[in-house]
Image 1: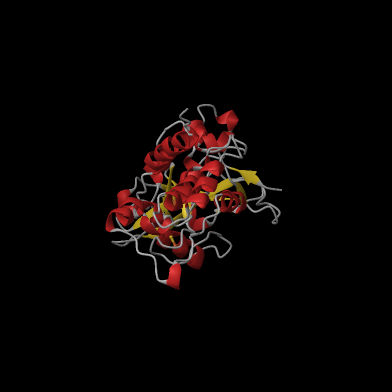
Image 2: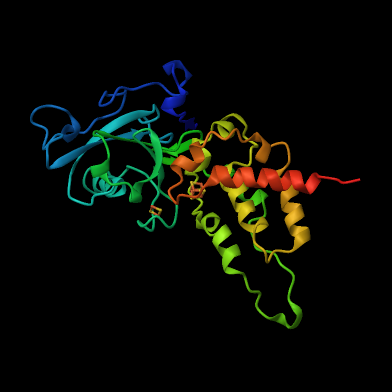
Length: 288
Ligand code: SF4
Ligand code: FES
């Protein structure tokens, strides 16, 4: 059994949610909300200067009583510089070891902790609690199957990335010397190389939500990174352009900018997609 979250902004009607709506702090059948997580006056530091309430999506298909999606509240002691990931780790370590989420580097490098925080895709380790409205609502990335709590299935996202052949390919130079890249060219592709495969952009994209085959902004950006690299072989460039100009490629983008807005590495994704559209048109222009 699995479940999938859709973005609240995109649901004007709660009935479109693919899971039963549960009010914050409400107890679902068979689910035990811990004592310290209640909103009573006696709750330790509830929403005061010293603690912060995080409201976390919970779902576990393998544990009886947790198979219904619901939210649990945790009150976490707040300190300057605390990130959403810090708060989640505190909640897991101090209150509920079954709370499940991905993380690794804690410095916006590995891309494993992209989450839906207060209604927007963000990295948990890059998001300061101090910058958010409270209680902080933490959900798994929308439009992906939820495996457990905040962990979603990223397999399809990785397959879309693989589809553009995300490897540098070039002809060996005579004598095997290294290939130089001009400063201008490096500058041009610099932002596109910053992708950390977090999937935030893909999760934010309405087109990807409706078309499972759409390559998505991250994969197209990956193609851009190589197509625009002056060192890549011309025939490979043409092959890449063929991949991204197919039915579920660049032309599906409707320039909504949601990907660009959420990308934690500030990659101008929409701009890159538009530039590849122009390259695809140029490739097919014929002069008689
Ligand atoms: S393009 Fe940005 S949002 Fe998308 S996967 Fe890469 S880093 Fe994440
Ligand atoms: S933990 Fe690696 S990007 Fe956040």
